[in-house]
Amino acid sequence: MKYLSIELRKTKRRGIWLVLAALYAVMMAWTAYTYTGSGRQHFVYGWRYTIYTAPLLNAIMIPTAIAVFASRIIDMEHKGNTWKLLETVQSKRALYLAKILYGAIGVFLFSAAEFVGLLLMGVYFGFAGAPDLWAYGLFFVQTFVISFNLFLLQMIISLLFSNQAVAICVGLCGSMAGLFLMYLPQWPLLRCIIPWGHYGATMFVGMDWNAETRKIVGFYYMWQDNGAILFIACWFLLLMIGGWFLFKNMDTDGYHFQGIFRQKERAFSTDKPVKIPHMPIELMKTKRTPIWLAFLILPLISSFIGTANYLNNIEILTSTWHSLWTQHSLFFAYIFMPPLIGVYASYLWRLEHNGTNWNMILAHTSAYRIVFDKIAVCSVVSLFTMLWLGFLFITCGLIAGITTPIPVELVDWIVCGFIGSVSVCAIQSFLSLWIRSFAVPIGLALIGGFAGLVVTAKGAMYTIPYALLSVGLRANNPNRELDYNLFLTSSVIYILFFYLLSVAYIKCHDVKTQG
View 1 (cartoon, rainbow, N blue to C red):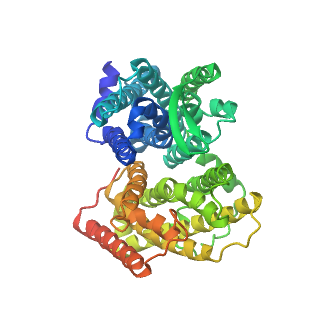
View 2 (cartoon, rainbow, N blue to C red; view 1 turned 60 degrees about the vertical axis):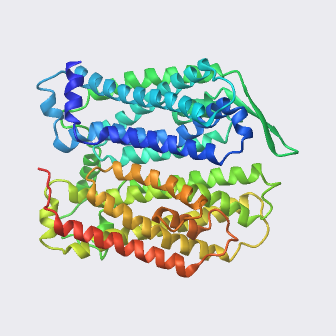
View 3 (cartoon, rainbow, N blue to C red; view 1 turned 45 degrees about the horizontal axis):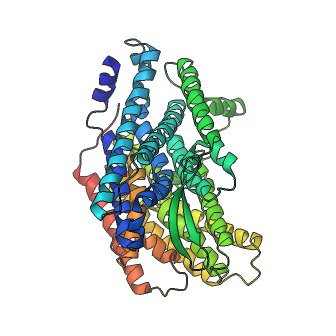
């Protein structure tokens, strides 16, 4: 308890608890929005309907938030190089257990708050009958245990890699993997093996669906697969024991995998002068970085989910390429791309926030040029992501057996989607400049994606930049006409506003450095 109190004092005023608070607020707001838009027939079986839909939302949002939470707990030791110092005043065992207990408290409080919030929301909306408290209690226990396992996994990754981009990319990929596995109930073993699939593997509420009338008949309790519980227990033991083994054998300076590659490079080096390629400096900073892992994997998962949805509903989605595009771009625009841009922007500003780099860069470069380069490089990487999405779309369509010609409108969708993504790059660049944490702006990007979905559904898609991405991609309906003047005007306004705001922030604030 003494070392736990030390951990709590170390994280004072670092906004760590705001991560879980923001996650809780977004999930409750989204749940309330879902109830508001549902017909009254849902309220007849609302208590079971809640437990049926909550695991899907948990699988999408909790892994990324847990990655941010664990990263914020661990990265302070990497930044201050305090692993060596801490071992002189406390044992490794005490330090390891204190961080685990800190995370367990955070996950427990969030799970309990979700449990209470869902019950209160059901009472507020007037669900029929009384809730089955045993079912909600079981849901609470499952959420806590699964989320705690994910915390242990993310904590280990944050320990192993001082560059927290690795841990955040794993969390983002985990969120997408959890969503993907929700659509694969026919592969229960895969759900059980992958820890992010445990939210779907432990579901115990099923849905009755009338295929003829295409209406929900009701919800029912079903037997759980005991194999899922066994895998969850095995993952817990593996992470606890394996994490302790890795931490115990970690040098006091931490793990440094990059040093291995540098040694190999030096072994093949010569005494000849090295010629620096003609490449933008900001783009050179992304060389051999883990952001390319997210660049490759996240659109790939999005395409798999979209194609699976298309094939499972092919009797309804009769517009071939247009229908497939809605399935590919919908998840991508609202859930995948905003946090992916957040990763790009956070990594680009990370080097300036470390050490005394601000002193050096401001001595040679103007604030206008710094911000422009950051947004430009983030936009270029976003363009590559859009092209990668288009390639996956065509490939998946051919694999799905679509024989009609590829629509020429695809070029327009990708170009307009890219323009919308630049506005997201601008706001994420400002957030990463303003917030020194690597992980927090990425969490805000995930929240922004959900906010874009809400305002688009309300017809106010031009009110926030996160919605412009989906508008440009025609994520909701590729046949919908786009008001190009309004779209381009809104995009330019957002880009210029956050560009100038970033420049003003640099000019009006003293340089903060980390020694």
